[in-house]
Image (cartoon, rainbow, N blue to C red; front, side, top):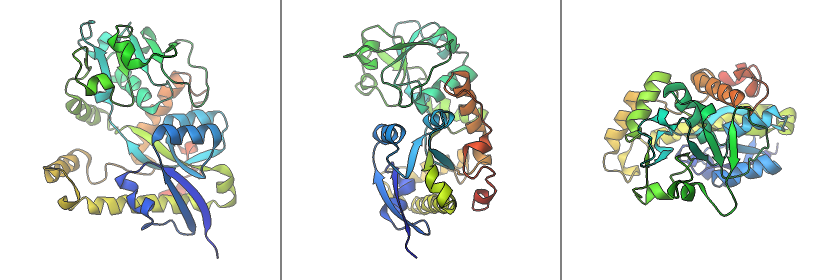
Length: 323
């Protein structure tokens, strides 16, 4: 019997290397893997649904799902990242602690960006930031148009300007941006991190919340799932196998151009345990419930779905059997 040919778009991660290279393959599927950066991949899937399977922004997935788009996620999360180190302030504008962002002008890439949503939620839940008090400046168009909550004061960056330049020119007091801003990379004295020691803040946040923020999930087109429901489980198995291959490779320090790799791995295991990148529902419930709450509060989704309903199959019993 011939295999089902599917195209997967994803990032070029070590967790997925064996899947990308083809040394791990989902049973019954001939997978054509295309690696590309997040903005291109997300835009092409959200605007044109170009791929059969796609690593997609979790936040954008919930917005698209709320609007009835034609793909459904499986509980695989290939990209996570703590975000305390991406919260930036302009020096000399009275921001000494996170709560000092209240009443200020803060730049974003988009509202729909997963990084920005997590940063807003963390500031709100743990640092006394009142999101209603802030004037939000968005640089890019949303991939999936939506109407933000009425309490959100949203402005659009003018053509020819960007968040980093507005920060340096005094038009903004802060920024929550998905990538390191050029002014931070260059060491400009006009800007600084809201959290001077982001790693310590991130460990503290994890210890308090139990959340390692999820940036991306994996979605599959609904017409494929309707005709071939077994694809969901077989792909999930392959993602899990690729992760295990990665973990095995990480045991050998020769595979890293890092001086203290053994010590870093020991520190990571002490904080997160043996599997910092879990798939499935239960080990990710806290993070998923937080994302749903943040998006609903901020007007990105009209309905507040059950976590079980976000993934295929709805019951997850079959998928959980393989985890």
